[in-house]
Amino acid sequence: MMPGALARRAYRYGIQAADLLRSAGGYEGSKSLSVVVPCVEKDAAILPHAIAGVRAQVKNRVDGIYVVSPASGLLRDLARRESCTFVDERQALPLDPSGFSYTVDGHNRKGWILQQLIKLNADAVLGLERMLILDADTIFVSPQHFFRGGKTVFNISDEYHEPYYRAYQRLLGTPIQPWASFVSHHQVMESEALRELRAAIEAHTGKAWFDAIISVLDPDEMSSFSEYETYGNFFRHSRRPQMALEHFWNRRIVSAEAIPETVRTKGWRPLKSVSIHNYESP
Image (cartoon, rainbow, N blue to C red; front, side, top):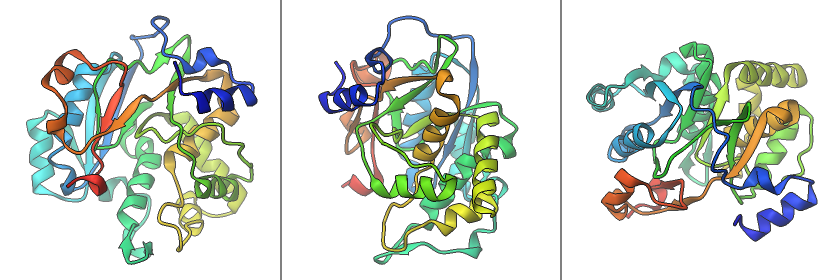
């Protein structure tokens, strides 16, 4: 069953409940994608688990896994050991990172924003058509299918964060009636939709898309922009017939040791993924 609050909101906004339930069939395993994992050195302990989760659980063909990070011998070596492609984030960023700052209550949030810009620019840098963007602290623990019935599967959550919706309206001019959240710690992004999103932001704001995003950051708000919320809502507004919705069934845990060995090898239902957020770790 899907969570009651999400079900009620779905009903209110006319969403078919079947789109929110995990389906046993109709998936398209023949469609391929590439996996892009932005990270920093503090993710090094969890990253191998995230990569293993991709290889064990993603049932679409994976054409390659790209580890994108600041110049780091540690992560470059890790990527090589895991047979992934290392990408220096300076090649993936659309701007000079020294040109802005984002600090809230003494907390430097600049790196968090830079990772989001990398995700929204990854197709332009890597030349990829379909990408599974994955947070480095999230591990798939049961089979993942990202295409079914000619549609792209978006996993959605019950989160609600008003600043994300305000940023979206300022960037694109369209208000959102949020009945669910696209913040699920991973998302399939497609190059054509990303190009349309960047162009739409520039048309509405009159600025380069990355400058527009930086301009809407709230200096009093720790989290004032979400790449997943922005891309997901844009895709829903512009390509709704191509979108299938499922609940993300994610659980936060404190360490990889909290995942039983059977999870890594056999899957852990009904969970789809677990996340080990740095800010929650001991």
